[in-house]
Length: 192
Length: 101
Image 1 (cartoon, each protein chain N blue to C red):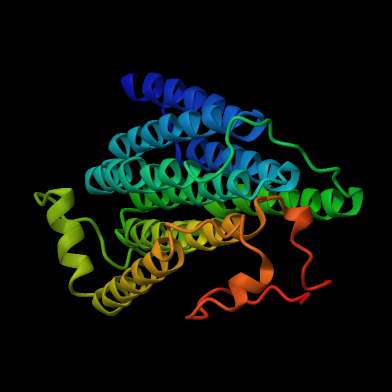
Image 2: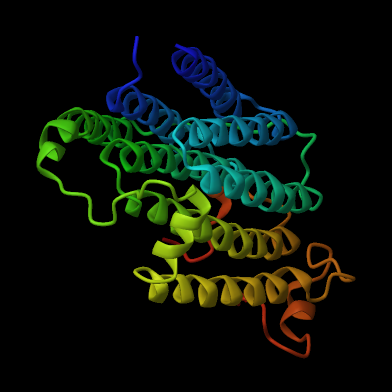
């Protein structure tokens, strides 16, 4: 009973928050509603018994990703209203058909999945974090290490892309000055 | 009144549709990133729900890797976006036509 109440409450809150994120024209409203929606999604993970995933969701998404977005928004003009695109009807049609196919597949999936056997069944008497650790460091060790390398690469890439020449404003410089700067880490945008 | 797997899958579908709407209507690249985060979160809910109802931990593992991929995507994407904004002063998709594509 309480599970149902919690599910419907958090489902409504999440849908409202993400709708605000998608529909608003203010960037600050969008990022705030986004952070709230991420917290509400972690509630689903706690309801489903995936405690470790819920904690990771709060730490990584609302702690790291949202802080990174807030940091990035300091560079952009966020007070201006966001201009929306005139949508191409063909693209909308194709994406709508794809979404409909996806809905059908999702509703069919539980029928098909009756035949699925659990490869790594959840053991009794073992906490969720402990079980996750055991599976992660035995069966999924190679993807885990690859994810670590990927995060390292992206960290170095982010530092190099955003951190270099922060004291200079590339917007106010002429195109020739940018191309004659000593190290050529910027992509050459052409047209000169 | 019991919450079944279908409830979670329907919720995941609704959130994914919201993200798709965002991808279709946004022109500002930062807002486009927000919509992709919504897409990734919708799939995470589906993975965790299936993991719970089948009794298999693989779904949670995939959700972890999706979170890791989302984090690195944000780092690289925001870095590229900052460089682009420093050079042009705009982050609109329609102005990104320097390759005459």
